[in-house]
View 1 (cartoon, rainbow, N blue to C red):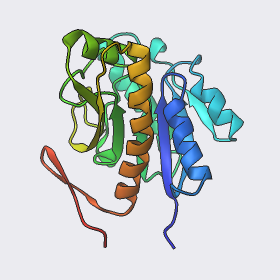
View 2 (cartoon, one colour):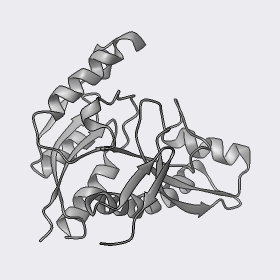
View 3 (cartoon, rainbow, N blue to C red):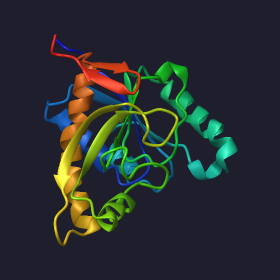
View 4 (tube, rainbow, N blue to C red):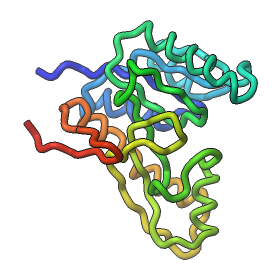
Length: 212
């Protein structure tokens, strides 16, 4: 029997992505355990979601680390907290801060972005900012991307993408909801592929191996 994957989850906001993973774990479609949830500020509602499900959580407040030069301290604090647990994978779930990934977690940190990378991504492109930019640019297709994280925003090798048509009359809010539905499918799928040992990083690319 496949043993559950031990996850550490980093959040900054409402925690809907976290909730989706919790729901998939509880319905048995994702064999995993969330060992720790780390919030980047104390007002993140995702921390309350963790509490409701009796998942350990902690705040490492980005605001207490001033400026880019101290990002190392912020990342180090996260790494130290993650290190208290035996984790197989670190999951960024609406985490809008840069986490500088130490060697021990290289290839073991995933992120999901609500657009088709490399479009509409990078620093400042999060939440409805992304969907507003999509609509303003006039593209016909958007979607979501799951990728391995590196030390730049939305930059690491892509694992999988799912698409959503941009409709006439779309609003940022409406488009966000449709993209999120695809995120709810994509992230658990990528985590399952990781758990099955089917993701091989080859430079900028991720090769999805056939089932063993």
